[in-house]
Image 1 (cartoon, rainbow over the protein chains, first blue to last red):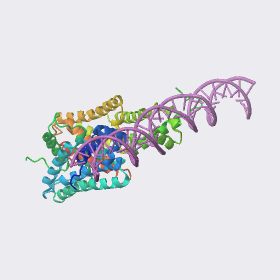
Image 2 (image 1 turned 90 degrees about the horizontal axis):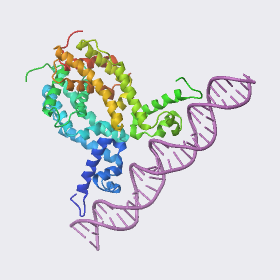
Image 3 (image 1 turned 90 degrees about the vertical axis):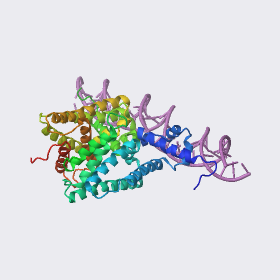
Image 4 (image 1 turned 60 degrees about the vertical axis):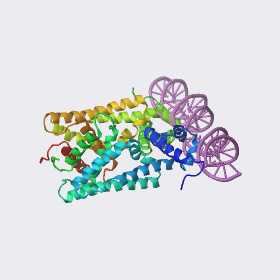
Amino acid sequence: MARTTGSHSDITGPRVRAAALKLFARSGYAAVSMRAIAAEVGVQAGALYNYTPDKQTLLFDLMQSHMEALLAQMPAGAGDPMVDLEDFVAFHLRFHADRPDEVFIAYMELRNLTPENFARIEALRRTYEDRLERILRAGQAAGVFRISDSKIVALAIIAMLTGVNTWFRIGGRLSLDEVVAQYWDMVRSAVGAGTLPR
Amino acid sequence: MARTTGSHSDITGPRVRAAALKLFARSGYAAVSMRAIAAEVGVQAGALYNYTPDKQTLLFDLMQSHMEALLAQMPAGAGDPMVDLEDFVAFHLRFHADRPDEVFIAYMELRNLTPENFARIEALRRTYEDRLERILRAGQAAGVFRISDSKIVALAIIAMLTGVNTWFRIGGRLSLDEVVAQYWDMVRSAVGAGTLPR
DNA sequence: TGCTTTTGAACGATTGTTCATTAATCAGGA
DNA sequence: TCCTGATTAATGAACAATCGTTCAAAAGCA
């Protein structure tokens, strides 16, 4: 619906989510009070309830938005396992490097979701893992990847890639391009695809 | 000092730590109340303060004990980079598989430590990472590992290995021996050490 | 004037922690 | 074996503070 009269919703709403994202990432969901979020926005606690029914939904919406953006922007896959794997690795690293707070929350706050909300986020996460596993199985079938258990390799790769967020910061010692190149080297080696000149 | 009269400290004390470990791992430090810990032990909240000065110290002691056990049991290193790396991988996987709760806390609750306590745990963690990096540099110098940045590779390997704790459970589809074998395959490949028959 | 947004107070519940009091356990002597 | 005195552990109430959430009233804008 179009903007209604006297409304600041389209200004305050995003600021509430941004404040919650920042504070949840820094201190954790359980340790952040609604009053702290309100103070970050510059508003009283009661005003937050114009933008979220409760604190739990605020967390869930942040995680859901993140996971849906991840799935929406993920490369579709060209069909060549080697190309698809490289694209996946590059995409994962760049997407995650751009959103350290969202990534942190998506991995750390799963246990603070209600069971129903947890199940919904978990389903999105599995969809993402399945995409990588499908690439690995295609390469396995084509004989270009030498791996035994595609599920384990998929999880190991994702864990390795997501680990960059514990240390990588834009503007640090290494550029994002260098990080992508180095991780692609490791992933390519780990799946048993020889070190080919490119 | 030897056991003093009228004391149950040596019984209740460990039970307090065990209850805190279990509940912190399940729900997170901030979401667990001292009353919840006391209920798990079967005691009133006030009694906990015979065994810890406060909640923060309870968390810190759990994390410190875990990290010190990790460092104490870590293999010393024989000198051969290939052997040392394989030993490190196997040790890491087995040690972590045995202690899912401790590992979970050690990685998730860092931000709930006071700055001083955080610095102390962080120092222990860095000591552990340095041990792996030293193995990698030795293999790099000896020409047996083909890697460029030993620091990144060390962090990537640790992230990959620690990731098993998100899915591995003793008694599941895969035995621990199978997991160790598969991860060693991936690590050996990732550091560019050829797939040799063993 | 009509509608939206924000305030600010209030609510019941829960938080970490303290402490006087009670209960339990022990060593040593009779 | 029983008693005594000493010592420790656990209770249960209390504390000030903070929690998520609600809502009537005030403020701001079209």
